[in-house]
Length: 189
Ligand SMILES: [Fe+2]
Image 1 (cartoon, rainbow, N blue to C red):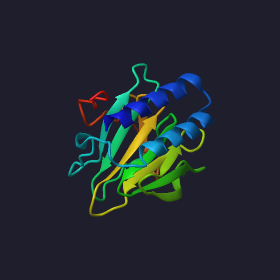
Image 2 (cartoon, helix red, strand yellow):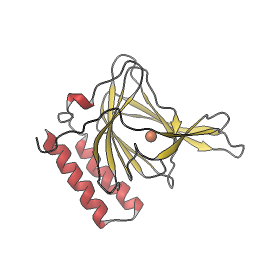
Image 3 (tube, protein in one colour):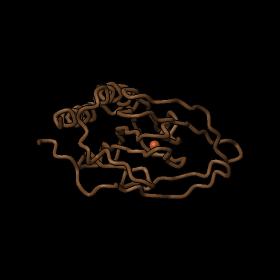
Image 4 (cartoon, protein in one colour):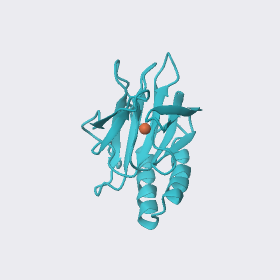
């Protein structure tokens, strides 16, 4: 079912070619992502494999000019990201399992406080960006099975320097996430 992913890549490419307003990119991109994750029948198994220790970030597609990237995130039971930022717009669509997303806001003393927690069920989406709230933590809310979500970002997310935070102290650490895989799906298979 690579056709679904190919059509999604085409949709996002067309969207970004004709639109530069972030709010509209998020709104329209979110509709398209909701369509992609509405039915869980297209993600190749190789890009849905959990790791016993670490959550996985599989690159599905990267725009050659780094205008966007599409990634499958796979959390094993109980796994979660650190509190982190993106420094660009991002969309999250839950494909499988159940995810828990906690938004954080920086306080006057420099620390981060959790402001909102929501569960993402298959087919549901969320958005982040520096203008609407860019710091969050995402966790697998299931203790006995993996969760998988599809993410879209406004740049090549695995290649850029961003930050993880210690929420209590507010201390930031720079990181480049990279990708767990060295191959991408054949969209024309
Ligand atoms: Fe994130």
